[in-house]
Length: 332
Image (cartoon, rainbow, N blue to C red; front, side):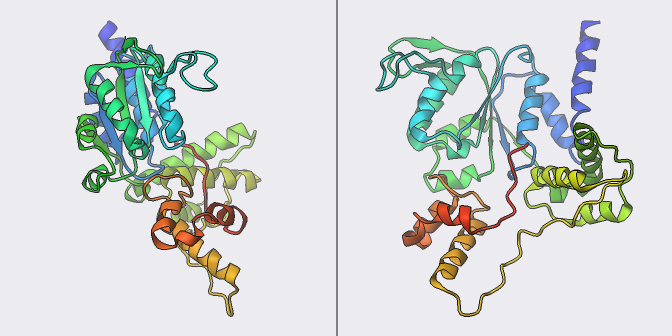
């Protein structure tokens, strides 16, 4: 009876994943195979393909589902703070440390730790990450006491870590430790058969949250959405549907045509110096897929350092005040 109940819980959770019967059948099969184990999982795929959803599914289908799922975005935390964020610190460990702090590994003890954007982790922190993955122990900053932990790690990246290893931007030993069970999530342009299901799901979700009733999605609208390339994947589609629901009335889904972010801006006759600077920075933003700042590989800032170092200090200001890109907020 207990086994039947667990099988029903597993199936009901898998059924919440859009496309689990279609293009994601292979991914779901891998997910169900690895979730009950303690193996480290490395999720690869473009931004917005649902890596966090898969990480949550791995946790929920594992024996650890009653414990914490702790999430860390390695790209969102400055390199100087990431060590204390991961491992915690003792009172007085550094200037301003007036209290002790528990790190994410301790919070995830007997649970799951999701390390998003692992490719953006600073090289100097990677040996300590390797040690805790191998030995299951660490010391908080400023402490001599070794803490033992039992943590299942799921990591995610939109970088090619093998290329970063070749370029000496990521430790080879850490890569192989993380790559125990790799899973590659396909982009939305390779899942066109799932787009109608996504559209139906998001339309109903946003309509319900806005107290609207939308019963009709015209065939031509659905055809337009299926044919669009969605370069930012599910995240872009989700935000587009939300905008469309806001603009829709009278029970029908009537969104504007999707924006094309890959279109080049029109050339300006007799450009000023400001126009030229704006053009170069926009080109850098397109090359970096609108990842603006930070020292992470592939960001607009690092692209400008290599190609136009004189502009790198102006990039963030110009992108905020002059550029009008198709940027979407974080979702999944």
